[in-house]
Image (cartoon, rainbow, N blue to C red; front, side, top):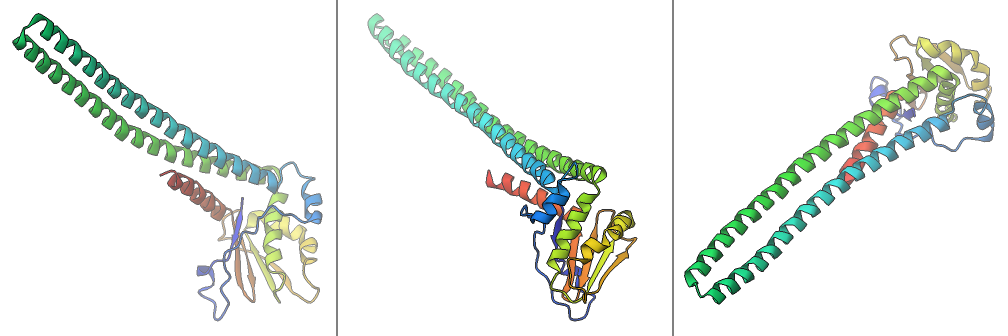
Length: 262
């Protein structure tokens, strides 16, 4: 779920570095070497991605279902109005025939007026019902959409937290993806939170092998970082590895789904 971004704000204090554009470093195309290593763990980055996609799909289906229910409700109300109109036409003909047959013009006119008034009131009430249903239905759907979005984000947070707790090597996959983006740099400085500093340093030789021997590869601890955050400093600029950024991306994608339904 974590996304690597090149942060323009993060390098404002540096003099002369080149800004690096945003890239998704967690594409599903894993090289064969990495696949073999990660398959040994109980939870993989692929599984986290699949769970994220499942959440997005369920949110989309739930939103579509709510909208479909509301549309069916409105259609039913419109059919009721049409039925009332048809009943009015039938009653009108009956009244006309009865009044004509009995020869009571006054009774006919009074009957027509009463039936007309009753029909107008019935249609007015039906129209108000549909209008109120439309307003309340749209409000309900909108509220449900945001509830679904929040639930999806909370689920994603739990997935990431549980995955990292069960399999710390998942964090190494995130770091490895970031380092691949810096392979053409002349110097690599990796900054980590204290939580994952030991894990990464224990695997330093494996990570350093990604670069030529003459490229310095240094690892530092930064106590100001959040537990799952890290970043890479190179001669080209900074590459940020942030779980929070992936959650922001998930929220953005869900919001886009909601907007596309309007």
